[in-house]
Image (cartoon, rainbow, N blue to C red):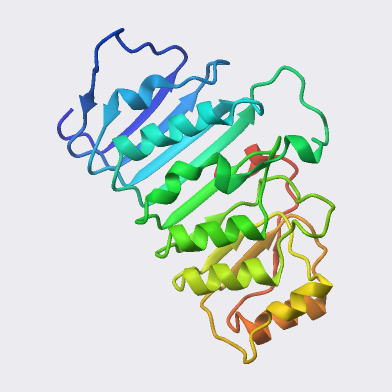
Length: 258
């Protein structure tokens, strides 16, 4: 296994030896795909596998409980410890709770930067995709957290997160996009559920137009007016193509789920 570069795992039950720290090292591994087929949110596999060379980690069907986000954060912590050189991270999550409301109330929605907080220490991150259609949402505050943590970010795909709370104070608008563009100058591709322009966002506009490198912006909601798109191009992203509206209804139809 010393020459292995790519590994795909589909495991249902994994138990680490009690009282012992067992590790399997992959000195040349570049990419790992892990499919979590168990209904149990616990995932000790990342306490066992380790690779200092791993660049790409893709996790599918990861389970979590709304009332116990700390357990999921421990999995993220284990990934950071096991794979310190990550450049590309993909994670598709789903809620493990027995009953899933069609529209989760605000009290059960989880900020994406909180859910994946341990990964914010991986400053080498270049490409990040996080998908969840149950309880995880993204707002301007999350984009600010990512801009501070991942200065080398080139692609950020959060298309498949919850639509922001109807409360206009928690949404994605000019402040989040401006912070992200400023903190991640190499970012050229961004996907978010929706973008809105709120009255208070006018105060976030720079005094002079700025030229950031974002070229592709994708959303799942065709709510962006022609005026908003023109403003984004004028003030922030002069090279941005027309908005890519993704009309797929399920994350499994997305190319990321492969």
